Length: 295
Image (cartoon, rainbow, N blue to C red; front, side):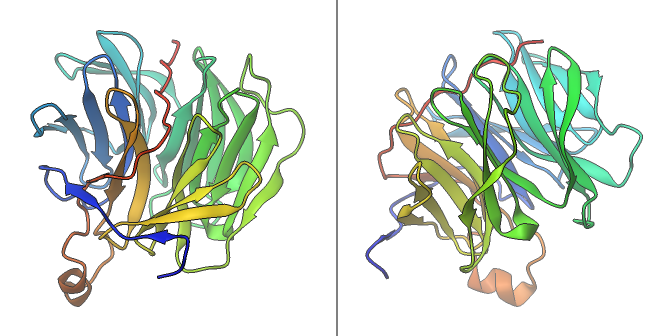
């Protein structure tokens, strides 16, 4: 283990393993974590106070959830943004995105402090350049970056002036200046991380210090990068296909990490028995709570 690697310390949450666990988030108002099994068409609701999971069936593949208010959420799906009644689970399609394209589904996304959402789409079989990254503000959809294969790592700096994103297929994380009032880009993206090691860049969150925490798919870890793009530490996770971290807890000081078992053979699953589990890491971070999406 190299000097920047920290051995796994944490717990496996009391929830069923996901085929493709993704899109974790945390509602500080209720102490509830949420994440998706994208291909299983499930939304997991997890009460951290008593470690109980509730599974909600979805009629479509979903991948990102954001709070709107105490009664409503928005979830990004293969047909666009659905408004979800938190108490009943009732869904209403409010912002179609690629709704007429059966090839694609939603993938990674995150809400900016101004209330706008960046959301990526991709081919259901990771078809080359089938997806895009969109900016959605109060129902208005703007295409930011077309021809994306696997959109990931979408997150924003603490002051809201920088966006990060990756196309996992290119092994590069990009950085772009954005307007903090609108979350729209100012100028062209530049390469922030050129990743040539094991695994691929997956989901990211950016903490209060501007450190980017990125799940590395295929490497069983979450890497921390400084705002200058230097990897500072790597937290080991006992599942190879780590997919996305989220800040959780009353002070956002813990990392929840999803994973996947999709694509693994029986022999690989035997060697990776925690694949698809969701983990709570012991390593303390300076996290931030996610903003609400503004309809």
